[in-house]
Amino acid sequence: MPRIDTQMEGFAMGDVLRTDYQKSVAAYWNAEKAPVNIRLGEVDGLFHHHYGIGDYDPSVLEGPADTREQRIIEEMHRLETAQAEVLLDHLGDIGSGDRLLDAGSGRGGTSFMANGRFGCHVDGVSISEQQVAFANEQAAKRGVADKVGFHFRNMLDTRLDTGSRRAIWTNETTMYVDLFELFAEFSRLLEYGGRYVCITGCSNDVTGMRSKAVSRIDEHYTCNIHPRSEYFKALAANNLVPIQVVDLTPDTIPYWELRAKSSVATGIEDPFLTAYQEGSFHYLLIAADRI
Image 1 (cartoon, helix red, strand yellow):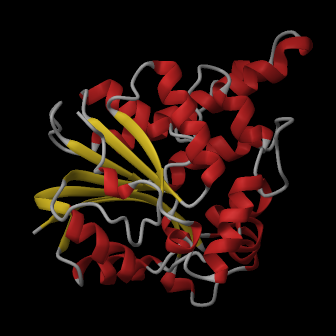
Image 2 (image 1 turned 60 degrees about the vertical axis):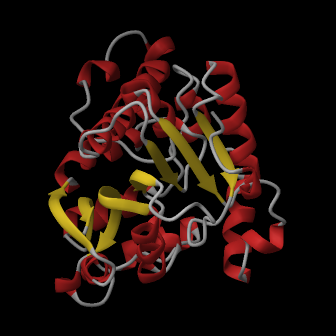
């Protein structure tokens, strides 16, 4: 059974990257080979592009010095895999015949986890050709290329069939796009009663102007973090009704504290910790149903 209609393949770059900003974001992720993503993925072959949740085991900081760094890497990877598990927990009832969409799929980690848990078909879309190629290589190595595939596509205009998806998720990717445009596309793609799950960082409307820490995060990742209210306005405008909203902020702080102690720290750890701790930034999970 093909993963995706054949007319979906072979899009030219100009059909996918529509603005100079999208080209700059694609260039950033095409060139990205950060150890914080690669080394963690090498632990078990699941390569993620998101952060972790849950308390870390303090014993990883103890013990023999020559294995300390590997213990930290493995623990960070456990926390980021735990984050993906929480996302999948909120997708609702998924059957093996359902088709899911991973919007902004990175190197494919959550897509493989979804297929492993539900036995379903998963398509990932990304504007990074390098990440698409990497993820498809992983699908072949895992022997699941008949059910999990990745495509050079723009999540604002996927060209997928209307009503073809039982569930869609975004995992730290919404800060690169206009939310009203994005959720209009997701509303089109979801079947009636289908589920959209988002995990994202967002700025706190209550504090007014963004903090310097939030601005540093934007600059570091070439993104544009949205205020919390923008998500709910855009969902409501596109027939997507939240059924659950979970503040994951306290749960993600331990990950950042551990990452700051690791050799794969990038320098962005302090702005994240400052923004979370001062309350200018939130880490939210939103699950919404298509009506």
